[in-house]
Length: 575
Image (cartoon, rainbow, N blue to C red; front, side, top):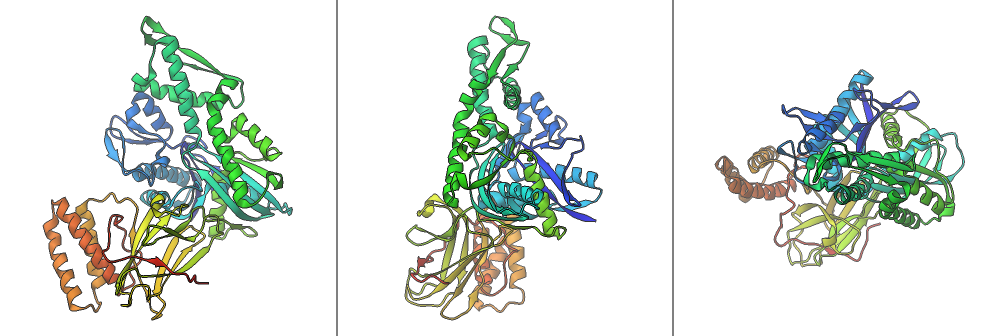
């Protein structure tokens, strides 16, 4: 037996859930814990540690552990811990692999697929990084699902017998990210209307602010500077996090570290944090979350008084000040049946069972949480699929050339919300060769963007004058950790495979032979390997116009520029 699990891969903790019959359950790890800390470390003997073991190792050696890996995905090439350099994807894969193994031990069968949740604000590079981490952990990401959508789905399953049509606001304040989502729910049916968020706002930011306050007090009151001692700093961060949690149910918490060597001898630093002081520290972050709540209501076109239910998700949503301000703004209390720490994982399990066909009577429609489009010749951004469009979504538009007799165009795909392409995030560059020779502005190139329910973006282009649909080479704009030698060897293998059996003109065939002959000379020469890889990428673009090359090519060509290529928007929009 094999199964699809639900994974809430969080900044602070990772949770796994499984649909057991009609009830989603949290799958405990090997220690019996319902949540596995999203921490990875290297022990003194070189062993990779994950979870509570890694947190403990961090206290012994702060430099051996990595916290908050989720915030690095899709943004950083490397992460340093344990005295060596790692990729964030490998660090995340270690966490997911541990959770996968624990799930297999608990469930008693092999797990090879998962529904993995991410913040709604995660961009395409971050989502690709999550998929890459899952693949390295031996998991197929059946779906990358927005966290607030998963929370809404969990509530919908619990409330499936509620036939009242109502608007629901999901307030998802996690360890590293924040999302707010408005959806319409009736029985087992959910339709997301709008989602807003911030992937740099979370509980760990409050922990950092609380640490800063405590460290300053340690220095002024006891003459001890935690910033100068990484071991003490790591311990103090952990104590601040625990104090924050304690202040959710108490009016006062104590942060104490006994037996420290101060300027005048041994001291036992201890500072008290009362609820008022904590709220002054946390207020800027909670205010940011409330501003996003107002924004999501506006983008959904509803008022606070229209909302019929509040769902809290994420550990930071337990903060009394957040609950109080949210309740005052919405005019109602949150749903008491929800466990904020577990609802996202439970929703992912519900979706996993729905994908497997084990659930019936449940429908769910999500929205695209980002805007996708193309850069055109004057640096403008032309959106084809806009943020908050229901999934699946399709966007079509006509484009034309910017130079006379132009034979190829480069489609630069952007994720962004600004009219300037430079303000967006580059997703990748897609070369469409072999277009009809004509004066500039004459060719009509139809471009279609499609995003399916699994958040997979597919791009197609064709010449409207000839009716011939051209295939395109997809150059992954994500980070590639392979060496230049590994890349050029992989590209050469793909080029040989794709050219086999194809009828190509003599010039292209000769050029391909010459470039492939350069490959053996690249051994030990990174500069030559990088240059040859670039030549091969260009040749593969030409081959793609003659073959069905789609998924085989996954190389970093985000810096490529193709001379004489470009697009201009046409006034006609395809319907």
